[in-house]
Length: 529
Image (cartoon, rainbow, N blue to C red; front, top):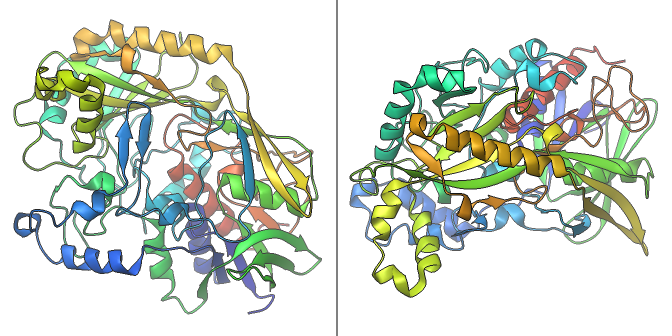
């Protein structure tokens, strides 16, 4: 304890990447966190389940994992092992008021990586032209992240635009995925001529089971949480770092603000009993997630009623119908995360890529279809329909998307973060063009958009959000410098998505981790003024 320690606020992907870089540079790191975890009784059930292969599980052995997770035509409420622990609020959590914005954040150990979809992709240079650094400068940090985050990935048609820094093996395709892949491969030239490229999904999954309870058994429970702990969560890295002599982890803190002086920082936090505590260290690295981090920084700067803009990647969910069904689609060995990535890179539509993640059958699909059909479900061949159904989760560049405004407002003796959605008619027009594009290439992909069931997400719904304190080579106002220091601060570094100048369509977590590692490495080596 003391000014020699670097205080990292938050245990999510940004926090662990920054902490790892600082430790590698010889620094002492104190990670403070909300730190809620899976309930002990569920943890024990998980241990018992992980000791057996799925083939010998009792019939209802995994039902408890599915509790609470619900899918509907408007989206998915995704829990982890049937638990809401990632979303648990603690005393001191920032109050938020939303007007047209989807609000969800985590104070749990591992942050939202406890419940994410594990998809990872780097940014390409064309999608980060407004950044004060290049994709090439991030490349060594993408590689460094792969030293502690396992990713199932391979070199394919996407590698020329989105490098694969450490090829392994991709997750296997299910019956529908294999059928779709064959169609895509057979029409690759035609798709490229239309501005589409495709590749196998890249997923942060420890498929081989190295150091875990066992290798992936393709049990099909991915959406509920892996019984063997093979889906990467940054909580796993926290546990690994705790074996380092220069690292300590303390849960139970809800950080409010950070004050800095010439030679140290003071981190003011609320404990579970509601009491305040002040922690002192050499520097602070704010990695609490974009919503909480923004509130912490605005509160630290006393920047009340001062607007900030959250850049957001517009999200929509689009069912696609295949021309033919896949026999045995619901049986056998399955992984139910994304199977295939499609990238629309048609400059006639946008200078930026649109990222599509293709999902095939999951048992989560069944109930929404039955609910939609109602009494007709007994007559409708809904299993035949499911055999042809794939689901696309689409993400657009923040420059093509509406964002939202945030203001920290005083409310009596406390405050709240007010979030207000912005309108962007151009996004509506681009979504229509993207749908026309997918319809135009239906003969090449073997599937057509089922537009009647498409759902557009409100800002924030896709969880690809950031940019409230964007990095700049010459920062002004609330902008950050290249070391993530906003508004002229010297010892406070923001290392999560809050400092990304824009949000590309491709998955945000991997780039957030790379940038957090970059900041930690540079500061750790003494390269920050």
